Image (cartoon, rainbow, N blue to C red; front, side, top):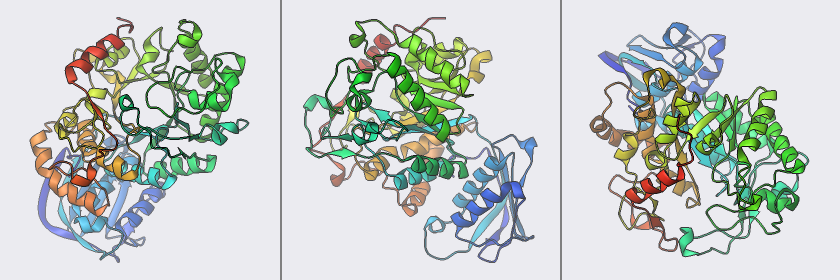
Amino acid sequence: MIPQPVSVVPAGGAFALGPSTPLEAPAELAGVASWLRSALRCPLAPGEGGVRLRVDPALGPEAYVLTCAPERLEITGGSPAGVFYGGQTLRQLLPPAALRRAGPTGWPVPAGTITDRPGFGWRGVLLDVARHFRPVAEVLRFIDLAAFHKLNVLHLHLTDDQGWRLEVPGWPRLTEVGAWRAESMLGARQHARFDGRPHGGFYTADDLREIVAYAAERHVRVVPEVDMPGHMQAAVAAYPTLGNGFAGGVRTSWGISPHVLNLGDEALDFCRAVLDHLCDLFPSELIGIGGDECPTGEWGGEDRQPAFTALMAGHLASRGRRVYGWDEILEGGAPRGAVVAAWRGAEPALVAARLGHEVVSCPDLAVYLDYRQSDDPGEPTPVGTRLTLADVYAFTPVPEGLPAERRELVLGGQANVWTEHLESARRVDYQTYPRLCAFAEAVWDTPGRSYESFEARLPGHLARLDALGVDYRPLTGPRPWDARPDAPGNPRDRADRLAELAAMTARLPRP
């Protein structure tokens, strides 16, 4: 099983799970029971003497115990989420064929007791839908696969220089203009190649409500992000008065645009309107405002970002929400209550926690899944430093040197799927899996976990991914048709990247 449970105690015999198996569940587990019936393709009619679901708060909110005997199967969770994770474990106890949408229903479940709980409360994955838009159905599939691996946060990166992906009442040009670009780059920006094909798309309010509801049924929290005040060229292209004299279109090149918000009254009102809309659509306490990679050239070199971030944090606080931002928001002082996504190496996580901020660790050298997976020249558009399956498995959210009394501030970890070079669902699959399997086990963080054990269990798990229709990267390396000779990459050396990160974080406060 992946992630590996804390304890598995086998017993003799098996429970026969089939169409006539009764299911007993209290009202508070009606949602989990409905999901389980659908996932197992079994009616599981209400009744006693078969599968029983129940809640025992003494277990802890996401913990569960799955007990299977020939006459009964019981899943007890500390909350509905814990019962849900027990249900996902049950799916992994069945043959891979049970994960398919068609075929026989009815399988033996091996008897035994599984006791399990996660090591970290934030087990997240970011999906960038700004660089390449992903239709709603693909986002729902992405959520299903993340939930199958017991991840519980989807960080949805909704806007960037290259595209604006949500409607905002009163600002129609954001989707009429900002959601579309004339063409996209082919490969890394250093090669200056373009495909000549328009690209775009956006989500309606109903689309986003559907994504949120679908995720909630799978105990996944959706944290939205609208990047501000930088990474805003798409918005400025739609409404030039928000900018500093820029009158061009949505950015077609990858990389960071120098065109940022002017932070005048109109721009501030715009940002508040966007955040209000996010609060209306997303129940998450945390609302992402980005805050990363904001050039100051259009402000005459003056760094106006800390004051802007404080204003937006105050506005969100008036809505009962908190800021979620990249670690650049630490520069100049992050607002009280902000949660920091530490991406520029391990040091920002250490700094944030020492300053008393809650932290989500997502260092690029460990969990950026758009980075190349090997030195094989057949890797499609190889960018960034090499990040192997073993490298991802070795990730731990808690930075070295953090005092024990500050460790609770590290909420967990997050893998990031940036999509500049992931133009299709197939490419997203290839870059994400099976590395996200390794990440899921790293943040579930079972005591004594080992890569050798994970490696031995992975082939059996890949059969499950086959059944789920995931076009993952083979363990043997890229296939001939995976290569993208038309979209060349830009492989980076790890030592060079470490030096670059050290320079990038020089402005961080040193507590």
